[in-house]
Length: 70
Image (cartoon, rainbow, N blue to C red; front, side, top):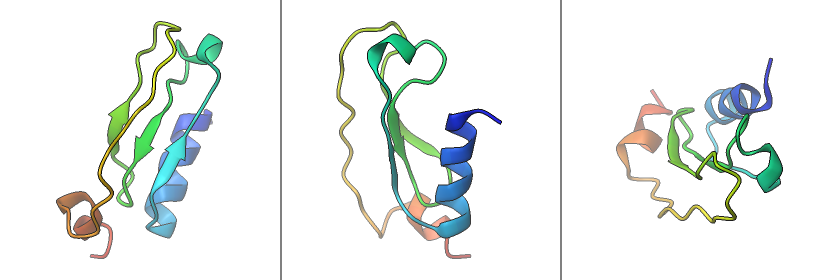
């Protein structure tokens, strides 16, 4: 199982937000990003090796957060 799938699984199984970060040289196979409590990616950084930062507003009232409690 790859690291991105594991991160999504942990987010969904434990209903928490996950910030997934990797060095830029690994971005082609596993780009950094932010995962919602339901396991969906909210933001993905480019997979081209360029330095970048993903930014989202963590909102427990969002649809992605609400889906995780059902």
